[in-house]
Image (cartoon, rainbow, N blue to C red; front, side, top):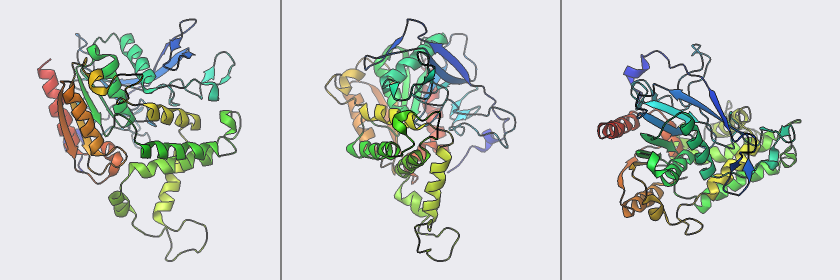
Length: 388
């Protein structure tokens, strides 16, 4: 994998997290479930400059455990500050060029990274919502994003881009607000979860529910269910990799020893890696948010005849030009699911291009620096801009 040597020489991009609050007072947000929620706060970040005509805006949608910090740094202390999760793609001179485009990334509804979710304070009780937080859907997340875009005074998005659960948001944008989306790039995503994807999510949820510290979601004033959340992350992380990636990174190598311990302990490097990923995750994420967001992803289904129409009928109103990208080693959302999406878009009469990128890193490949992805996005966005 390559990074762009030219862009790496530029000064770091410094950004600031911002907040937008709506649905205050009696004007609550109506969710797909029929529940009312308010007030609602959405954390977001912007990059680049909005053009005078406000016609160069790109919305980037993050995956389930991501956040609004898609690129850049919060301070000039780049040695200790962490860059955004897609810093290799978003920034000056990069695939999504902030010298040309005004990029917006917001934290999804139901998350715990600045936007309203189960860990937020319920104004009616003065305590965290916990399980009293209403179930949210991918559609609810997109509706909240749309209100943010309205708040920014943007009438049309040049492009909506996102991978994994972010890709579901991209598709939902094209269906809910077709008049606002000029182009769309869903990466490493699907129109609906397979039974296997739902199964892995259920194992992750059960790991949390089985932790005695979960206390039916009411753990915010006590010890959180760290063990359950760590195991949930370990399960999820396995699905993000591939057999080849794990063989290359770990094989059957032992962790800091020359022979088996013959105890229930860490023997293999891969065991140590998964434990590390789990322990790191509990420091930044909320267990209840994982429950809610994985459920929202499991519920998502563009192929269902009820209560929505079929995917091709839903996409028939869209005017967007589509670029669908999959990865050859992604077994969580395999390429055949992206091809099903392409077929649905073609049946709906949409302008769609498809690219499968050869990569052995599994589902996480779209997050790994890769000049091929940068070049593909640059070419696609340049074409959209020229024809604008």
